[in-house]
Length: 223
Image (cartoon, rainbow, N blue to C red):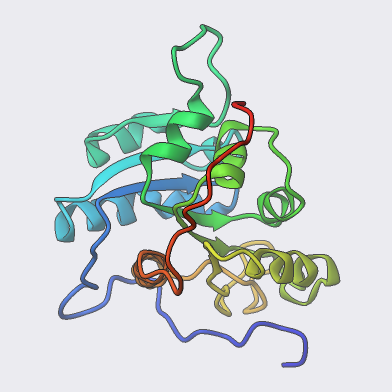
């Protein structure tokens, strides 16, 4: 298909046999306002079953909370489930800074076109987006798109922009059923195990620098 990410043949179910081996230790999982967010309890349960040693934090956008509740995820995740908004009360360390420094891998799944656009354009209008703009951790973005979304020039431009970033991988959506049309013309996000494989591979590459770190003195002002 010209101009469209090549479809990845994944199923929505957890794979049979061995789950993907993971080297990451601290995973930030961000859910956005796609109907696929309703599957997050299933995937969080899978993650806890097969990778109990991974320390997890979850952030839900306001739109994601239309499809899944924080109350449903907390007992499954055994981890904080945060809203993607700055707290009303001041904190010693702002939420976006805490998230950007804490994670050694970040997965946005599902990622709506709106979230992909905000990230690609360099916006920082919520804690999770700003954290992703500033983090050096490996970031995997798994878009979930409506019918026609995978061919949208806007989407394709945003994907090209994100792929220029050394620490970002975009995992293509998969052809699938659209809840809106009832036809197989939707583009659900790739299953979480596939996304985790991609982000962990990227994390490994980032930890193997192609050149030695600079020894120059840092003279930048503190911000």
